[in-house]
Image (cartoon, rainbow, N blue to C red):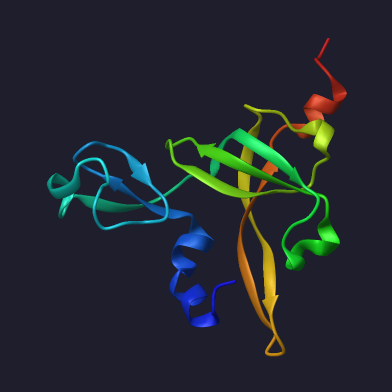
Length: 144
């Protein structure tokens, strides 16, 4: 887990899903970086901070039965690689669902939730997780 000072430095990205867009090639990146890994030197001075929409689809996923101690009360839990609408892929926990509800290509949206609590000082870390979109509609089946 990140130390409290490092975690707070990363807050703008974590809390707001702020990434960058390379105005040379048009690609988005998260977390933010100062140079585009595609354009390299052509991107110097061309990286623009952007707020990502936080919507996308499940690209890949897994169900975790033995994992982080901080998440032991949530086991099993689901991790997914989510492809955001801007093309960025992020790995995050998918919550408020059952394994049978999840599938590749399912639309999801980001939500802010508690990630962990740090030691006796009680510093609480928040960040993004994803929830399925239209899960209720899927459970009810197609409209007639």
